[in-house]
Length: 347
Image 1 (cartoon, rainbow, N blue to C red):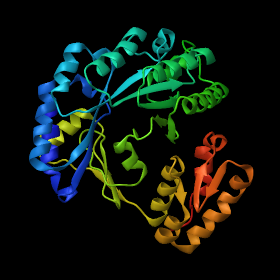
Image 2 (cartoon, rainbow, N blue to C red):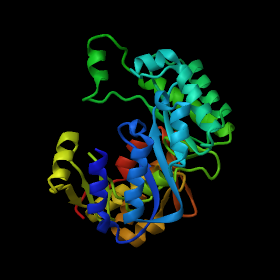
Image 3 (spheres, rainbow, N blue to C red):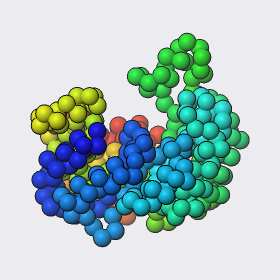
């Protein structure tokens, strides 16, 4: 796999046209399984073929059970300067429900160990809406994250996705299905407690201390270009989105045979409009009406004004100086509101 990642990095360097790379993200799958020398070999290829900024944000996703003192010592010697740790919960019952390998003790210790080794730029993932997670338990999770002074916290509602073990276990009666009301209640608690803890709710699922936004993910939400390397990796050049084959075996075969052929689609004007609406609405930067007018013209601007009016009246959307944001109540309706703002005609 590492060999093929390096080969793809070499083969696709022309796609960035000598642009300056501002962020690198090792994520999806379990990159913390990589040995430090394997990580270094990937960086060697990146440094030989790409131009990086003076202070790039370099993130690696890690599971708590991988974060040992020895591993952190090795990782600290690599260019990685940010860790994203998949905590999910600090409660044993929740972790068992989620079929996570790590324990609640490992979850807590992984954060402390990373901080002790100098990884101050940390992000952790938490999940709410787990049937085993009470309101009191959710409060404890939030308070632990704040008390640990983690600068970035991503929180997601548990969803039942086909193709994962969860739906099968629910159908067999071995696990309880998540309840919408529980998720809504816990999301309200989350917004309130994170705000009182000094965190900025800068994207629907993401909170940070001032100035600690994830640069890499923010580039996605702002529609910037990105290059994805590896199985299932997506890329975007501003007009075309492409993605690699999902199968690891097939990906390796294609790369080794020199025939990697990502699928692609060219975004239409309406695609660009809908993506701008969807991603911008989720962030604290909001939707700028000037951007819609300049990029998409008067017809789509008129459509936006008509579609957003009922949400302005209900208080779910707030408008300030030509920029539209979701209110806290509106954040509970984010997907529905975005869908109603979409352009569904030709274009």
